[in-house]
Image (tube, rainbow, N blue to C red; front, side, top):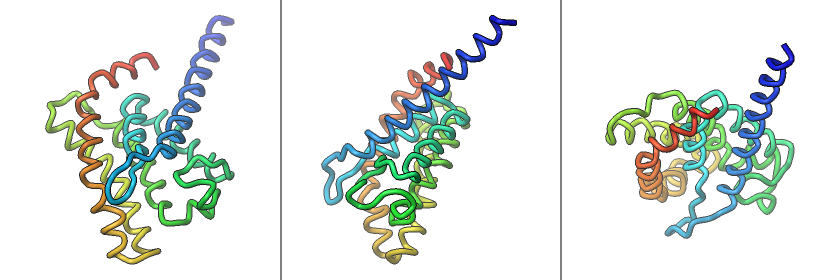
Length: 182
């Protein structure tokens, strides 16, 4: 009985540690800007999908919710914070829809079977990334108009997303091995 409690506590502690590490990784990915013309790109979409693939959908969603909660309470975890505001004010801004899309994206990346060929994996991971844009672009359009949403919310990031998807597809088999240890 005592051993069972220790094992359960150890498992819970491991999962909490993974969630905290995931939120730290998301924060770092939001702060590092990759020079990309004409708009600098962060690695958040890459890390969201990476978390889904490696942790699975349940821990992935827990990680993204924890990250969003950290931002909601005012921790400067998002791109451009604290310069562009923090908390709910920031989350209701132009990137708010993309942040909500992280939840759907991590679910898809963690739920779908990625033990497929290159093209099927590319399609499934693309769907995960597209989920972020399906919530982000309409929110940006609501705030700034469809032309701005198209140019600054989609067009400037298509090539970067294809590059990120390709890297994820090429590394998926190794990333899925990590899930076995959870």
